[in-house]
Length: 211
Image (cartoon, rainbow, N blue to C red; front, top):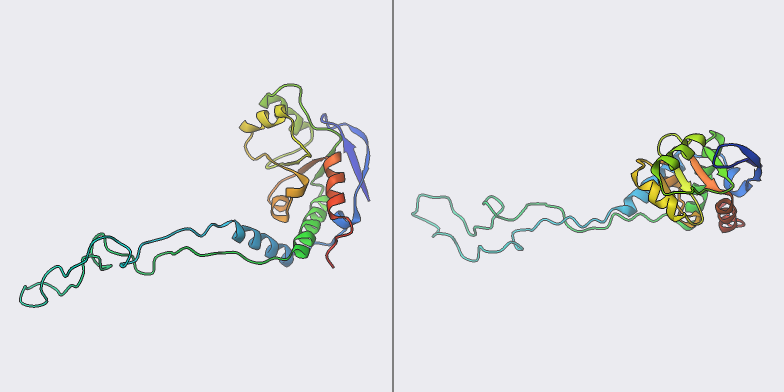
């Protein structure tokens, strides 16, 4: 397998081989759904916390005697029906984590990359850099590469000019090969990856394909 290698002007400068391990899979929609939902669940912190009646301050004594006041019976001013009282069945800290084995994560990444390549959403660039840290210059490069909406830039190490110029570009994401995952691939438009990043990615996953 191979794809076209281009420069930052979008001009063809050669070809680049692609690993069957990463780009030769048939995507399974339900499997990728499991991978994405588990990834998103693991991003949740689960730190929401509402105080119960035993946790709010005050309410240490009975507000008034039980009988002969003409008012309803109450044992504490921190009952949930009182203002500033505790919350009934409020959120408590919890873990939303879902276990998704490493072999499945690797296979999900390979399937998502295969799907992106099959639909023409993969652009391999020999080098990605701009002479000045200007957003306008970076936007022109992305237009030349046909990046479209929500492009994902995968590089070994972004230059300072690219990082500064990318700050004002909405939708542009950047990551290293080791940080790439199925959600990042599927949630992006086109993937723009440098040749050295592609070689690094192939080296990371070669011989580790999940069966």
